[in-house]
Length: 305
Length: 260
Image (cartoon, rainbow over all chains, first blue to last red; front, side):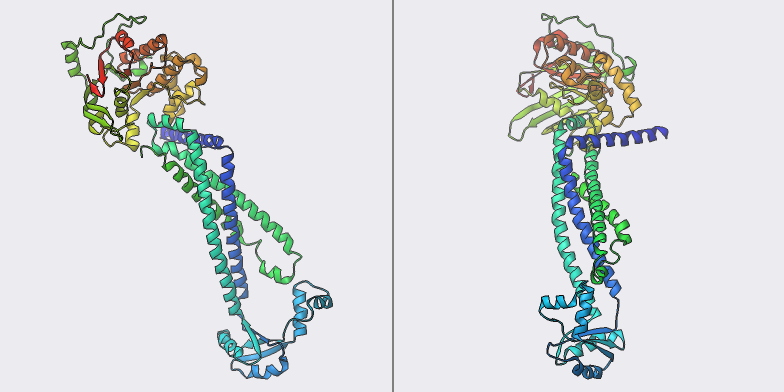
């Protein structure tokens, strides 16, 4: 029993020594592999965080009874109000004149000098708006459809539509992220494969001797697989540090931003997923890339194949 | 030293000449009936039956070779360059596969043998090369220990085995030297120590004296003879006819892939 334990630790020690020997022989190529993995995982981590944040925003929006109705430019709000109240299911219709809407928008954007902002734009670009409240949330789409059919109505917005738009944005972001991450994954695997292959070539004499004296293929090539995992994990660690640094910088930057921007980034820096799940995902993904890259590299040199 | 090879049945010690005698007669033709009786009592360690080796370009390396090697034998294989000596040895340690026929080493049939099975066979064979094949960035003792580390031995066991191997080849004082700091003869002796450190029953030597001067060559032969006296079977290829005559052991002659 003791003998087996000693043998086990001897084998582990040998594998680790051979792994570090291989890393020493790799030289600057090691850094090429690690930095490529770090860039890939940084992009992957960033897209993951944006996706989570969009989910948070969607969650905050929730289900609301309110419909925003925007009138045509030359239509006066007071004339529209009675027509809106006549629609079945509408509980109330509150007019927001364009002057008030403009003032609120400037406040959200952090502009204190209203007259200067108006002068710069060349006038108030907004139109009169109604906040229509439905009797129940499930009737909101139907009411919105009827309102949009009225003459003088330019646009109708309600929360579900916002949710749908953000969902579309999230899907588009997700698809483009998948494409970018896939390309970088291939590049990272290629770089790791090349690095490991160069290390194997540099140690080919030792490998030849090991084959001739009866070392098994696993014994010869496992250290190289460990090197690949090392690249993956180190790259993941670097990517996580860069992501946390970016988040900290973002956190400092949004403190003085208008409420609108703050609401979009609410919870970004304190999300538990960023602190726990994200590093785990990056480590696993990095390790997988490292293993795949190194296995592709040693496959060519595998024992008597 | 003797404990090192205690698992092998000891043969009577051979009387070793002190220096090469170029006038001594080759004993290959003097196989006596006593030798035949001895062979019948010993087990076969290497057997080639109707072995043929044809390379991909159509060149024939070996033609219908039949060889039997018994435990404890010491045999030379001679022949000019290109006669098939190295091919024959490569078939024995699995670096090449025979096109036809059976190659049986230590009870393993090498036909189709690969992967871990081939690795297990190679642990029972010590191989010595003409170009030594030492790892440049490791010392003499590390080169020898390399074999045992590759096979998963503990450090204690490695230490226990490396010292006698170094002593056997007379390189205790060079244990911490790198191959580039050694002479050709010393490098070859290191290679022999590496080949025997895990006490294999069979040692294959492919032109071990090819790059050495006569004195160093004879020193290598003496070490191999000493190993043989402990029961190790030795098969050695060479094109040096003088050395073969001086060593006074059975010889197989290869000519254009045929055993003559």
